[in-house]
Length: 530
Length: 110
Image 1 (cartoon, each protein chain N blue to C red):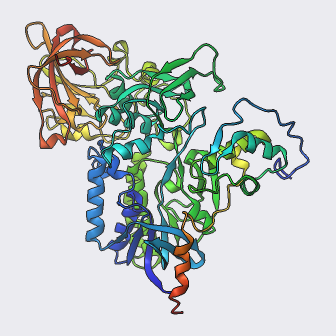
Image 2: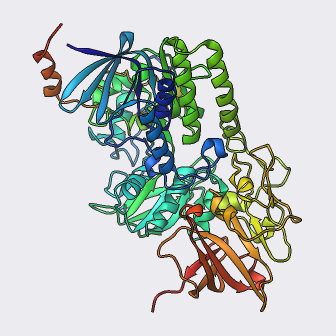
Image 3: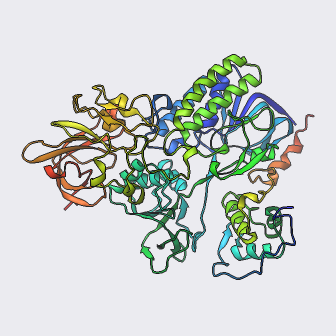
């Protein structure tokens, strides 16, 4: 039996695993990454949306582009990535058994980083085993990796960021999302993600869950019903939808089995998503030389996973003497600050389960946003991104404190201010002059920025909105303007369509509507083709 | 002694429920009723339930049902799911055909 030795063996070529490998290899370590999938990148390559955060977190870059960057970096650093390589076991003295092709191979790592990620949770309901019921992540894989439409008419269960983002992507793929359902009384994900789904007309049913998936050999329908505070169905509240697909986005569970097998101390931590290793600040497990990074030690965003990976890579490098303690401390201090800013705001891990009623600025949160997915016309004016002035000006409908600030950098005229505190709500400076360049609209990962000219002449207003659907409407096209609630408001005409490399796939659609709808119209639906 | 190790604790009778025939472990086709019944027959740990019913021992190795089974067992025992020790992690972590392992003996340079 042959055993090949590496300084570092990383299990999992997702955002955290690749980041860990890059960091370690940069310090001269001989690194190999094993991944059971045929493609590297973990879930990154199916993330077609722009990421949140700040520049250092690769904000406003689409997930799959971040994946491409990571792969190139790994390649440049000399990291060996083995695909279709399934780690079957992790044994004493850090021996790793990997199935590659039709053979089992043995490796030994002086250090091991486990970055195996997480798997989707399921929920039981009558008919849950019918074909057509699938994880939201599975639907995303079908669409975004394989170009296969998961279904035509879809019900989404789960209003966390996964449920919201995948719902939007299903709409982009041309599917109909008939309802977004969650047993919780409030939407779990970012309000801006909910708002971009709601304004296309998808109804939200909070405090509802699936009672039954119908069909004999595949899903043909679904019945949902309202639940009380104890998650018991309330009689007489059934609602039926004809659907061919039910997507389930009810959270993720860490795939931490390898760590448990290696003898790392584990705990059941609901805040981290389930069975996780007990780790130090930088992913050190209870077994010397074994580290963990990313979702496997607690469910978070890919942006945090990448930083955690860098951290554990640096710690492993110091553990094996490739860098000094001082060098490690210097690297970690920077990463720690970066990770700290991502863990701020209303959705921070420390705030999970808390009932937050006000923003950091003391502004009451829109309750309608939490229940229906959109901010009411009567609520929107109280947020600092919503101002009025003559001529074109940005209207920023960003109403929750999330760690994100690309809009501030996008505006070269300094119309948009967030400041150094990354979770602060963006405020519009009315004294600065907007030049209608559109960069803020395109750079907002939450698609929450609109350029509004409340008086464009002839009693009309013009609204420029982010548009990421096909077919792209053309100038002169007539249709209907929809409100934040996705309901038809008035006739609208497309007056300008802008696409540019700098907008990175977000098209800017300018529509003309009667002036009274300037602060109401937020989406455009082309008239049906005759 | 905690709520789990005290096996003389009375957890009540097995009361049939309308959704007892719902499949929980798809790979091994184990129903909710079978799991609930097993608890009342005295199998109080995830390891025992697995050995008795094979749930979580199929192709996906419990990736889908482990949390669901834990929830059902915990509810029957009237304890928090966090109290239940998850199944032992063993190699192979993912299903590997025997012929792949069998090949190992062919090149023993040790």
